[in-house]
Image 1 (spheres, one colour):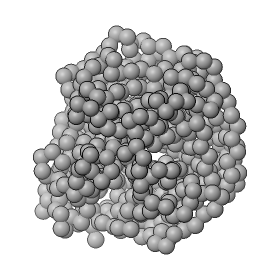
Image 2 (cartoon, rainbow, N blue to C red; image 1 turned 90 degrees about the vertical axis):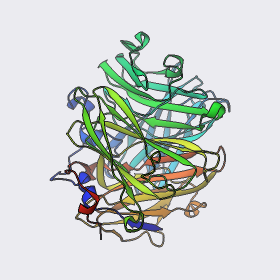
Image 3 (tube, helix red, strand yellow; image 1 turned 180 degrees about the vertical axis):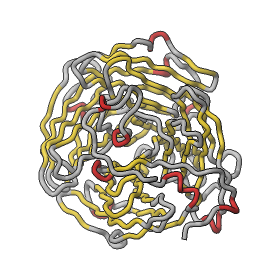
Length: 506
């Protein structure tokens, strides 16, 4: 278990600025077109004692073969102290849906392969839960690797994917899942490193009700190093995942990744767990869906700034409906081998979407490929639904306190297999303003067969998990799931700061 404190004033960008915890809305339709309530901009779990929740896992294949691009498994994690019942419906890209009822014991997790219910090139899952304290994630496995990804807790009429590629040796698929009875009509636009594209085949595209439609971007937007995508519904709402695979040929990364898009832009995005070892590449991709240029700071907050210093922020302008990718390690201002967090902040109030890509080369301790949309919210309670899985080479949870003034206190509870415990060093943890801490879960997952983690305390924090796979040579970074009645937006801005104006936390 390690800890660092970060520059406090730089973190004013994520102060709560008078924000109050909002009660979770039940329908995405309450927001204006193109926007989501802040507590639906990311997956959010219902608190224990709630009537229930609904989860949407859009992307994956269900061929029942080891050769499937991304065979789809859904994990239902019950962190409450009572049993819950879930109804899982698999929606294939071809054929009829199939349903299974799942009983999930207290403090336990159940995994279901969609290929056990349907056989199709692609399949999505709808999980309807009776009871609270439940979070759902999904797992994809294929010839190129293995990945965990977030499932949505609400549909939306917009989805943004700032980071993508169709370079040689890679494949990019958008999985469009319409869980409703009526058809959805969508437009898909792309911004690439050589300009914006609006393929005619993807305008007024109909996604039938109760159906998953897989769009292979690589077949239309070919051989582009950088591809950002926007999915916007003219009518209806849906859930969209991005599946990316690389076969390692022609210099392409080797790995598999699944990413739930950002359903709304935001002024602030947090990435708690930056790369801290050699052999990795790390980029931040920004997409501006608005009609005004966004002036954006990307601040890298190095561990132990007294020793490692404070790098100048990346200051960029992102034009309307355009994207930009920043190579975090490219110009030398961020030293290789130093762990860090990243704060993305709009200086002029024009919100953007932000996504981090991590590539571990063959020389890295953990080769692989991972894409993560940042956290635009804070919370005092977070769930890590999958903190261990068979074939992992190690796992960790990172918790940060982004406040510049308030101390956060929390306990991390490990649970699974029907039991719960607080490991040594995980109880009554105190994080000073600007401090983060890494909790190593060990290669034995603290002795749990199906480990989950709950972060619970006073003050708002951000949680993120990471683990590598010993089989398939891949890695995953994934934000924890905030619990709805503790969520608040990460808002606030600061003016220009020079290094000698920065006061270090602590």
